[in-house]
Image (cartoon, rainbow, N blue to C red; front, side, top):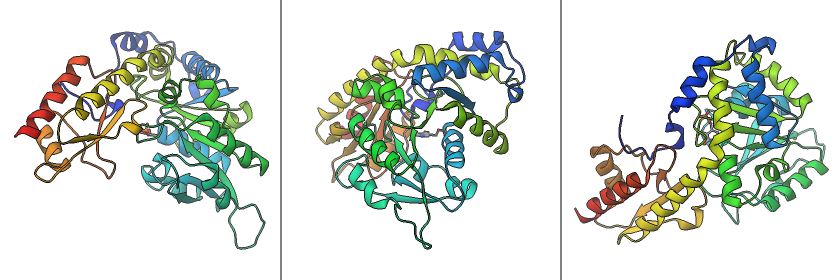
Length: 344
Ligand SMILES: Cc1ncc(COP(=O)(O)O)c(C=O)c1O
């Protein structure tokens, strides 16, 4: 295992306390809703998000797709920005599983969608040719590490609800978003009908997500989860670390954000590096090597050869993510490695 791990906050490892909680977890058959540890996790998740109920599911993708499946009927249209996980990274599941079509768009004025992006795409007139708008999906925090303002979410919710269209939030990193925005997580959650929350990213659990919403919605989602093969039995062993992640993880994100800012600041000081500081609002640092002799591909190759695993550059640049796997010394070591490449 590499010592430096900046690829993603999905790389966090369960702590000793989590392993101990897994060993000692009281379990039952969760398909029959008889696993006390899962029930405790779900109640805690609903309370933290300020919603009525929650459902433990295997992954963030599962949570999003379960929500899409419950909110829509086949042939419906789902409105989402192009760079969201739902559009780009869920292997076409919206079409394959829910039978819904995506209406994806590039936000015009900002990294996040605004009400002006969404309004003209709603199917507000009944017409024999049109699909119905079944759902709007937002993401907060965004995959570029930035956050979407609560006021914009509110405007979108008000518009959507005026046409009885539900809004789902991919809140895989909703606790990062709350910290980045400086608002309680419940204020973000209040702007949408349902939310998926990943326990296994910055919060540190090894597995799992919660889907959160009204009790009526979660009842339907439980049936949908079974249909999708996500009915798990004595799964309290996985819910137990999720409880620790929810209780203790959000406070730990402050350090991740501080280290990301520090990394961004120190990389920006290096001649030949450009840091996208306008997106640096959570735990992700995007940067570019300014050519012509050095470039993003060269830096990524250099880091990978030097035992610092790094994902290939994407159009937004090279991404470094801070998490519980990253210490202050790791930040300093990464900056030194980048410096070495630039001077090579
Ligand atoms: C914004 C966002 N949503 C959803 C997911 C999916 O989570 P999972 O990998 O648990 O399916 C991810 C994973 O990285 C993500 O970044």
